[in-house]
Length: 153
Image (cartoon, rainbow, N blue to C red; front, side):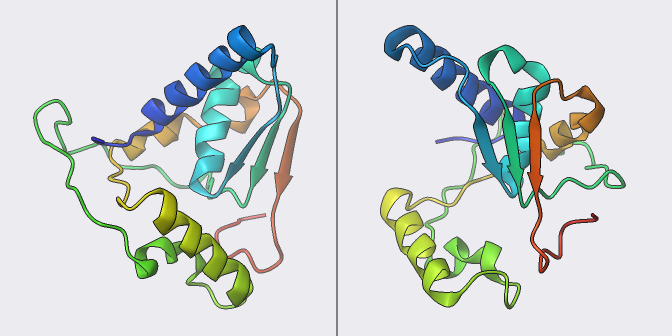
């Protein structure tokens, strides 16, 4: 529960990767990030390249011309809203016609509702301002679709 921030996500991934290395012997796997998750993956690749062998940024919403405004929520004092997820909420990423076929989008929405009935409460998006492709030192693959309206490539 609680607020979801880019740095918290990055730290969570780092903890999982450290656990996998220590307990399971999985050392430096490739990391795949999709959409906003690609920004989180990029932050981890910039800050903890020792934990991964490569990063794949799939459908990243990175925009070098975008600066997120400072956070206006005191996450130490204000509780994150608890909002039940809906099929409409789970399908937000598929609102662009032709981005993904209906069957795949429906399967994603069904899985999202099954595994996480709570909508994510994002804040501190200004932490994404630290994304800087010039700071990536691991092999990086950027995947962009021809119908991707978020890509500036």
